[in-house]
Image (spheres, rainbow, N blue to C red):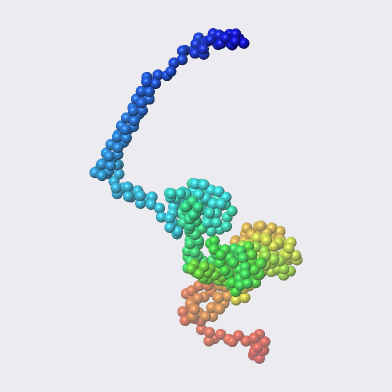
Length: 422
């Protein structure tokens, strides 16, 4: 056992130590006295460089401060006045009600983004884009690149952006336009868009006006008037009270005053009756009697006219007190029966035929006046041999005719009896 242990120790002594490996260098303790000075030198060098940089920055700052204190405008290409002017140019007033110029740069389904040179972009909501109801801002011509004047109506607290409106500006312009039209006593068209117990609501110039039933010339119901256009005149325009009162009667009175006998107007067939057709001529209902449709006999009006047809008619008579207008296409026929065979020709020749009719009427009136003046020379007028009414001719005495020898105009029986007695 002792031998075995001796051999084991001998074997251990014979083994090469790890440090004696041919690929390894002899192990030695690190020489701390030789390597420590290098990091210290590098640290000192970095510290010196930072100190120099700080000193350099401090010197630059002191020089800049001195320049600002002694010569603040040195090297600046503009004056203080020019700088203040530039600030005023871009100074922005964000008060509600302020009008601003802006450029649209983006649109979406809910509105449009507008650049108004503020700290943030402004937004134009869809409902503020137009005085009329629209489904998209593009319907109102609002597209990227559009430059327009807007009015500030609010602020979005979430991002401090401003809310703009075009509708408010258009609303003000619409009221101004209505005041102008009222002053000029103009007749305009208004579309009926609603009704209540007292009348109907008409849309004019983008505003909703009220037309009382008492100011509607026809006997149509509110339901019958919906979505139709009526000629209207302004009765009251009060923006402060938001009162816009309109009248169809006043407009119709003006239109009726312009209806002259023999004038040609365009109308549309409203309804057919056994005795004739009712024609709408600019808001006035006129009657085209069956006897005035054509020179040829018309037994069934529906074979000639249908509701909705557009045609030209001539004013035959106009009873302003009763509001009745009689019409004719018969007087416009170039040849009898054209209204049945070729109505297009009748409408093409309407003005020409009406002119001929008016000339005949004028001649008839002149003849009637001449008959009245024939024995009234004091009027200074007489009828020539050609049937022309004019001044007294030279062959008549200025004091008129001597009627003292003219026998009385007895009836034929009395004249014959007098002759027989002689």
